Image (tube, rainbow, N blue to C red; front, top):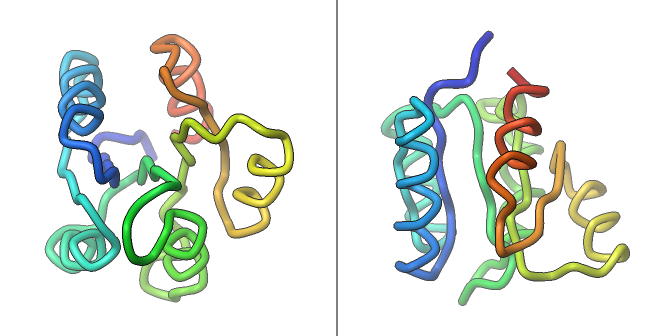
Length: 121
C-alpha cells in the first residue's frame, strides 16, 4: 500500500513546519502532533500510513511513544521512522528495538528520507 498520509510528531514547531513542507511538496498529506497525547489524538482521528517520530520531547519521549504505538493492536501495522538529532548507533539500535522500522537523523537529508519512505510503501 503506498504511503500517502504521514503523522509527524515533534515538539519543535520549526521542525514540524520544515518536515510538513518537505512532505507536502512530495505529495504527502501531513498531520502534526507536538507531544504523545496529541499524537494519540491524531491517531484516533485518522490512521496514518506512516509516523515520523522525534525522540527528545517533553513528557513521554519518542522511544516510549514508539513502543506504545507499535504494541497497540490498532496501530501496530503503522510503520514508524525515528527522525531525531540523536545520532549515536546505540540510539538507532534502541529506536529499532522499540518498534521503529527505520531511523534518520536531523538535519534530514531529503532524498534519504524519501527513499526510506518509498521502501516502506
